[in-house]
Length: 116
Image (tube, rainbow, N blue to C red; front, side):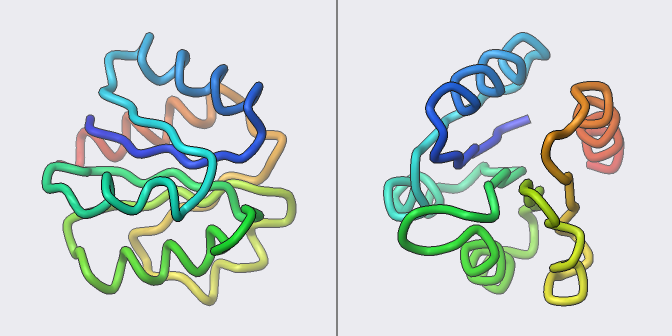
């Protein structure tokens, strides 16, 4: 799966990027929504994973923007208390509250992969 991952905490970003790559995914990671702007314009992005709280544009704003322009991209919003934002997001955006379990992440990705 072609994934864009946005996380402002470098240690978390590096760890999750390596984990996703070890599962066979093509991952490009960025520290902010603004830094990922060009990559988000390219075709072939299947999943956008974003932290809720980012410097600059929030993950919530980013998900709304990307989902309104690209019906083929799925989203995964991560963060503390992220579930409270569920009513404000399209159905194809999933929520993963931090700290999240690696098995939970893998199960969600496996479900998305079988849906494509």
